[in-house]
Amino acid sequence: MANSDVTSLILKLSCADQPGIVAAVSNLFSLQGFNIRESSQFEDVHTSRFFMRSVLESVQGPKSIEAIRSAFEAIAERYGMEWSIHDAKAKPRVLIAVSQWGHCLNNLLNSHRQGSLPVEIAGVVANHKTMQPLCEWYGVPFHYLPVTKETKAEQEAQILSVFDETQSELLILARYMQILSDDLCQKLQGRAINIHHSFLPGFKGAKPYHQAYERGVKLIGATAHYVTADLDEGPIIEQAVERVSHTQTPEKLVELGRDIEAVVLSRAVRWHAEHRVLINGNKTVVFD
Image 1 (spheres, rainbow, N blue to C red):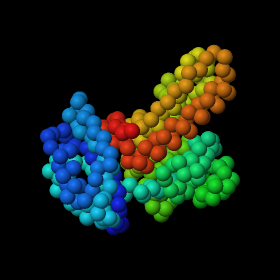
Image 2 (tube, one colour):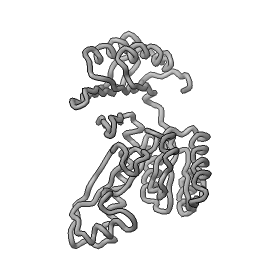
Image 3 (tube, rainbow, N blue to C red):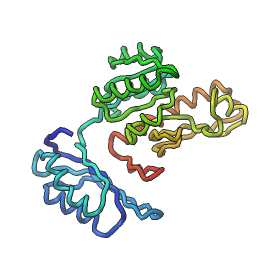
Image 4 (cartoon, one colour):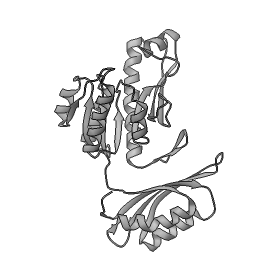
């Protein structure tokens, strides 16, 4: 990361739970001229692992973020921490992948335009041209990257190239209807978020809402999670459900499901962008 002066920071960390962690962190940032504006902690009692997120504000004017990171390294090493320090005012750059359904994409683009989604959208990659007019209307770069079974490796290399060239920090799969290869999942570990309906694994394949209708479900929902090589089994960030009844048609279930998917994905992206999510094995800790 480039060196820069900042006035506020977000610290994320996790480590084995042990005495003195909070005191050591607080003391270091006090010596560096920072006040703790907010702080959240959690101990996973089953694994004895400690998680912490703090927002800190300088009372001595702008500070070098690299100098702060360097000062923190000694504490991080002492406690065996996994940690990161971010400029609280910086908005991460994101790349969105989409196929032919635009409900999640439109929600993200509109939230960004309204200023309620704290990211910078670097562009959209798609294996169909369906969403190109929408992206052009929002003034967002659109990259058409068609894919076949034979060209999958080449197309994924193009996605990764766009990701790197645009200096993106997160890939958002906004109903991108392609399964990422294990190789790409590994390269983007912790940096790719997907959304799917919560019928998995009960209703796989085509028309899951129609399958759900046939089974008379009473709840429909959506799940946003980090992408891993295990299909749709990555650490869950956010979920939501809506109660339905026998009176609603399959088409109505699809409509409700799309609304839920858009909201859940937007929440997950926002929380990731605000550095509220810490991965805890196959789970996540999400600080409010």
